[in-house]
Length: 385
Image 1 (cartoon, rainbow, N blue to C red):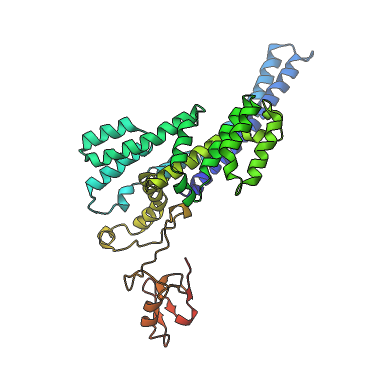
Image 2 (cartoon, helix red, strand yellow):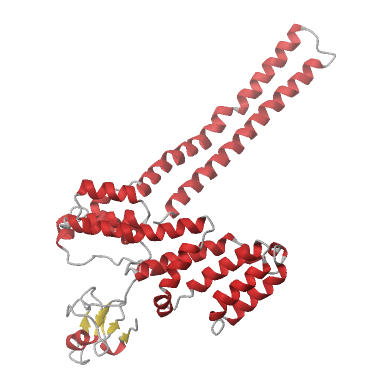
């Protein structure tokens, strides 16, 4: 979402408010000065009669009228009011758009959507909410099987919050071969956390025994990490005063808990992030350009409903790009090593076979199917995903 228009509107309001405040202080200061001058005159010894006081007040009134505070303040106050009136409109325009403009009449598979929603609740550890949703939406019991899978994960994570690593160590040990295949050193990280807990408790002998039993098998590939742990033995019970105090940081537990969650989901064949969360986040990011397009194309909604592809480019962050498959919009086929995607001068992409066909094997230029640009096939370059 582009927040620059809101920032600009806010800056205008702040600027006008500052100008109005400064002008008000200036006018008030002028009035105070004239009043103080009049008081000084009244206090003077040679003024004592009632007539003299009336003349001073008359002169003060004349000078205050000359200052004309309301007239001086009217301009800056009017500008401030205009800026203030526009700011809520900008907020409403930016934060309360009519997203129905970008809606297309697409038939959703309610069964699949309900499964995704129920799965999301279980992934987030909201088991009661997931059960309630399944009952009310009549989702098949097969979806409820996800509950038992993720309940084990949350039981492990809850134990870790209480500094109990036993469930996590048991799970990692049982799945150690699969973790190695994934290139994960989760088991070692868990053992390191356990070692630090034992050492911080003041038992150097127990910590040394723990290293020999559980951590030494990792020595071939993690020698430097084990050296660091061995040096920590010299600081038993006072690790927070040592050069290795960073090992006591709660961040280490958070990092290992996240790694455990990632690996747990991976072994279940699930993504680390909830598909529902990713879909909503990607849609939120892609919605503004579609809304902008629909505002421009007002009155042509029927064309939007019949389009086979997005009418404008929608750029998503790398976190939403999960694969490198390119489907040529001309041939309607996936690109291959023999038929790679090619970037044309206009910035659009077609596969090599389409470009060769449209250019008669490079013998002539052709029109880009996306835009009216003339394309020279010799200037196209291959893309590598």
